[in-house]
Image (cartoon, rainbow, N blue to C red; front, side):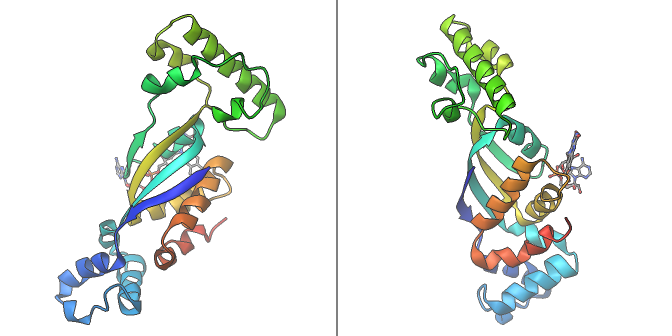
Length: 204
Ligand SMILES: Cc1cc2nc3c(=O)[nH]c(=O)nc-3n(C[C@H](O)[C@H](O)[C@H](O)COP(=O)(O)OP(=O)(O)OC[C@H]3O[C@@H](n4cnc5c(N)ncnc54)[C@H](O)[C@@H]3O)c2cc1C
């Protein structure tokens, strides 16, 4: 799994939004300690959470399974642009048969952590290759995709929704791949924004 932060809103924009309510712009220190504690107090502690919606983050998320993708897509307050199998399944067309979970198969599949499951994933992968070799269209072949098939997306989310995501999906009851994603997303955040999210990992 790889998570790259492509873009984010500076903290001073959120502080400006909060200060609009009281017209206290002159007290801003342009995203410094004063603004940081204002955001924490108003957005987190006082639960004026809509102010956190002014902070946007765009991540490029690679090397994840379609299993994880469908869980991530349940988080409706976010924007997703996902690699389309409709256009990209042809990447398998010129492959020779797959018979083991080797580096060639891992170009397309995410490991489950269980050898037997991974062997079955390889069979499913080879089935896709066979179907494409027969000239069947991508739109039909995709019905045979295993959940382990690798995908990637660009994901944009505001701070309020990101807090909800990190809280729900870092719990021990969440699937391990999406739990790993919560850590990777947190790690990719700008250092001076992390304090807004660290409490999301409190309950395990
Ligand atoms: C451990 C775990 C197991 C899960 N298992 C399953 C499962 O077996 N089956 C399954 O279907 N899902 C499952 N889910 C997904 C879960 O039900 C949610 O769909 C998912 O976590 C997204 O949460 P959310 O709705 O808070 O997020 P978002 O969709 O991003 O919404 C964010 C917040 O906006 C508000 N909101 C959004 N839409 C509405 C609305 N229409 N009306 C009112 N308020 C709204 C809510 O306050 C919500 O918390 C599981 C989630 C977790 C964490």
